[in-house]
Length: 407
Image 1 (cartoon, rainbow, N blue to C red):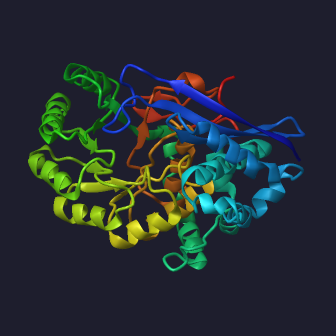
Image 2 (cartoon, rainbow, N blue to C red):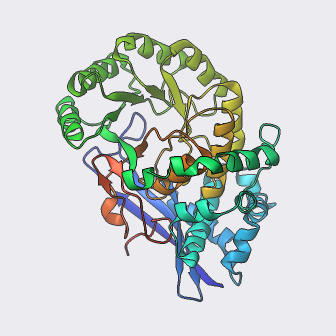
């Protein structure tokens, strides 16, 4: 039984230009953490990711939600978690602050992820194993499908889980091989050209075959020059992605893409405002075969549904510490699978929880295992930091979601 709850406003200045992009020049990587204390001595930790200011407000909202868990058994909570999550997100007064976006939705992510962590710890298994062991109906019971059944019915979702079950063993080898990663830290926005070139060489030496550069400058010529620098330093065999962090107009996005046609970019990430679904579709149509990647700032399953219906994203970057936690992540993964779009998450958690989720996506849902973003800057802040060997995520073996922060 959950006997009490606490929250933690955890902020980690990372300095030296790390984490900088076209809009967030001096980020403070922060977590609004919900901690559930079980009377058996187990502790479940859930995270939502912010960049500093307002993190305390997310903690206050998470506390409001989490109080409803006190006195309840985690097994009982998770047996009907989808309905419970919907009840929280539709709380009559709090919903006005969203709905399903902003600080209240981030708070729901923190609480949801704490529940999944405690459940996995209670069962003594890592999250990926818990998810693989659940039946289709048990998984569906943890999910809120409200507002998306026009695009994905419960029967369709059940089939997406059940149909690949017979071939799971064909994909379980990834547990030993490790999930491939890509290096997102070679080219933060504030890094000098010399630092970017040195980072590319270091990344290649570590075995990474995919890298990402931050763009989105008002001076598109700067971004074109730096993209050429990375391509030259990395070579033609490396997959190169660029991320504009929502800073360009549709026209600017197309201009940049035309100027870099010869660089064979794999994707252009968040080129324009994240609420502009049709704008992303216009860009996608203009820059193909370069893919449009989006999702870091797409706040909920309904907007993801619209993106997928419109053909506005070719890479789904849903983040479980930005949407309403593991449960909404799974709904979006199922939607993406139906629409034939790969899921390559944004990792506001530094990959801690997503290393579990991509294993489930690949083994259980037969999503392609392309790669997972790797950001190293907070590894020393976790009790069980991700392990990257040969540019691959080593499969976590300890119970839970790997999200416990050090004191």
